[in-house]
Amino acid sequence: MNCEQTVGKDFVPDVSLPEVKDKVLVDHPRNLEMIRRLKQTTNARLGIGRAGDRFKTETLLKFRADHAIAQDAVWTDIDETLIDEMGFYKVQTLVKDKEEYVRRPDRGRIFSAETMAAIERDCIHNPDVQIIVADGLSGFAINANLRDIYAIMMDGFAEKGYRVGTPIFVRYSRVATMDKISEALGAKVTIQLIGERPGLATGESMSVYMAYEASSEKPESQRTVVSNIYAHGIPPLEAGAQVVHLTEILMREKKSGVELKI
Image 1 (cartoon, helix red, strand yellow):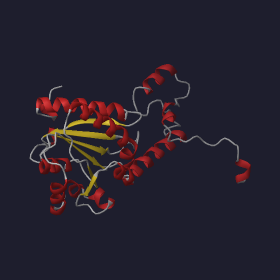
Image 2 (cartoon, helix red, strand yellow; image 1 turned 90 degrees about the vertical axis):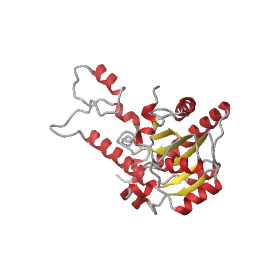
Image 3 (tube, one colour; image 1 turned 180 degrees about the horizontal axis):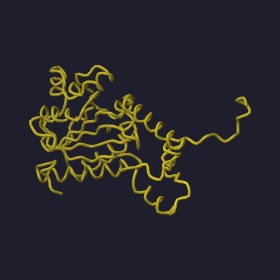
Image 4 (cartoon, one colour; image 1 turned 90 degrees about the horizontal axis):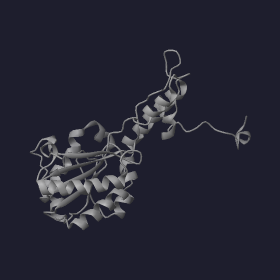
C-alpha cells in the first residue's frame, strides 16, 4: 500500500497521549470497574496485563514513548522569547552548555564573580518577594506553565502589597542558585520556579521552591515545595494561588521548610 492509499485510513493512536494510560489491558479481569477506579487514582502502570512473561506490545510502546518524552524534556531548552516578553533579567551559571549541565550538577549551583556583581548592580535590593525562573531538568515544564502561574502570582502579590524584586531567569540552573541570589539581594521570600526531573508520567511538571531569607548557609530542609505543577497534576493557575498563600504564611511566621508547621 502506497502513501496515497493510506489517506483517509485510520492510523495507530498516539501512545503518548494521557488517555492511553486509562486503558485496561488485563485479559478477562474479574473486576473491571475496580481496576478502572484504581487507575484514576495514580499514574502508576496498573492493569497492563502481560503476554506470557513479557509486556504487551501496547504497554511496551507506551513505556518507550514516555521514556523518550522524559529524555526530550531534559535536553530541550526554554523558549527564551517567552522570558524576554515577560521582562526577566537573564543570567547563567558556570555551566557552558546542556551537556555540562547534565554531567556537572555542582557547576549549575554557582555563578561567576562577574555575574554576581551584575545581579547586585542591576536588580532591586531588599524585596519582599524575589522570583526566579530556572530551566532545571525540563524545558517543557517552563514553556508550558510559566505564563499562567506567573500572572496569578503577580496579581496575588500586588493585592497583598508585597514589593516584588526584579524577576530573574537563570539558564542551566539547579535549585541552590536561589540561595545565592537571595543573599545578594537581601530578599525576604525567594521563590524559584524550576522544571522537575521528568519521570515516566509527564515531561511538563514544574516545581516551586520557596524559602524565607534563603541562604547557602542553611540546609536543604529550609525549602517549602509545591511540586507536580502541570495540566494533569496541580494546574498552574491553582499552583499560583497556593504560592501566594504560602508566601503570606512564610512572611508571617518568618520561617520555611521543616521549621514551618502548616
